[in-house]
Amino acid sequence: MAALLAACGDGRVTDAQSPRPVLTMTVQSAAADSSAAFVGTIAARHVSDQGFRVPGTVQHRLVEVGQHVDAGQALLQLDPSNLKLTLQQAGAQRDAAASKAAQARVDLGRDAVLLKQSFISQAAYDRDKVSLDTAVAQLTAAQAQYDEAANQLDYATLRAAVDGLVTDIDVDVGQVVSSGKTAVSIARDGDREVVISVPETRLDSLRAAGQLTVSLWAAPGMAWRAKLREIDPAASSTTGTYDAHVTVLEPDASLRLGMTAYVHVQGQAAGLQYAVPLTAVVYPQAGASAIWKVGAGGVVDTHPVVLAFIRGDVAYIASGLADGDVIVTKGGNLLHTGQTVQPVVEPPAGD
Image 1 (cartoon, rainbow, N blue to C red):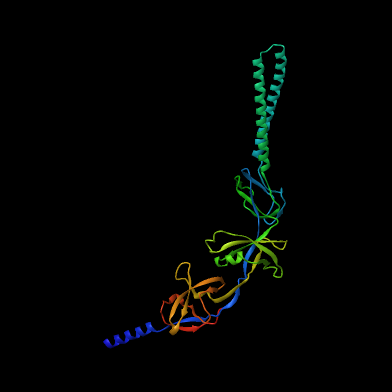
Image 2 (tube, helix red, strand yellow):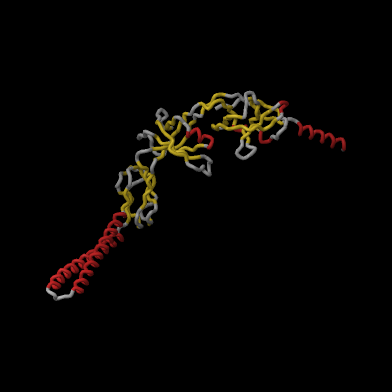
């Protein structure tokens, strides 16, 4: 039994010390550029979200999604019954105030004649003058209330503020809506842009790009000049990428909203770089990148590297490697410094 245990113990030691097989490659520098293509969708530069200024019940829906509208065109109509009653009441109050002001003006004219003949006192005349001023002020207020009620009735019809394409209608007939709630969205005619998602490693190259062009998946033979308008200041919490807005300089009818588009970034030569599989890059510390190098006798050690950018499943290393270095491309997460490995050659990574 002791002999068997000793034999088993020797076997375990031998297995633990045997070199671990890992995929490796020998790196070689090559000239690379920062050209790239990003996929996105055609969007409007300006979108007008419109809502009613007054609450009410939707009575008529006058347009549909996808329809082109002109500025001032009616989009939706609320039930105007209550607003008409309010306008009628305001009109009656205005007419009453006008009659009162007219009567006060006649009374004051009569008092002026009586005052000259000394049939009334100056105090009585002054009181009637104050009554006329009050009546005129009340008429002004009543007229303002009538004008406001007329505006409210006009607001029952929602009209397009701009020329454009209806992209969304968020209400329907019979629905009670509140003032200020977005009811219709209109993509304004004119500027068109492509919204793309950009990884943080490509932000600088996008900003410094010498030329941008846009092409359509549906029309591969056509291209439009473009320029970068802005990059969102914060990354998406879902994808970790930044939304960039690229404006098409001379858009035409071919660029329809929602179409798939490609933004081509024509960059300048980025010097000598090393293309390695993305799986070769490890992150021993937050924000730091490293590569496992295989040294003499198959002993591995980590070396810090600087990433130029990542394209697909290929990482481009700007510094930290030299021609002829043997690196681990897969299995690096199972290694430790000073460990002996058995290299298994992998074909060089490409674009």
